[in-house]
Image (cartoon, rainbow, N blue to C red; front, side, top):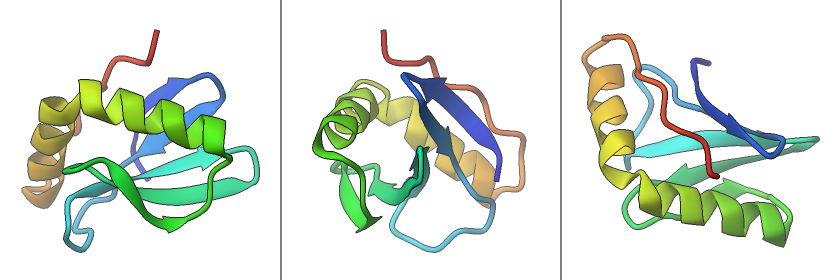
Length: 86
């Protein structure tokens, strides 16, 4: 699973040929979740509330980059890194 960002112990990745809707995957310790890009929201899995809030904030700030990476993944192109939450 190609990693596109990492911040505060949160690892963000995106899969090639993944199912709709556009989303990304998050790992935080033993927790895993799928997060929709538009609007940023929990699709599946579980994250602690603070981690989920940080991921939603990050996804909101980087919406366009995430959608561009989603398109790249669908076209089997290399994914670009997305800046971490600062």
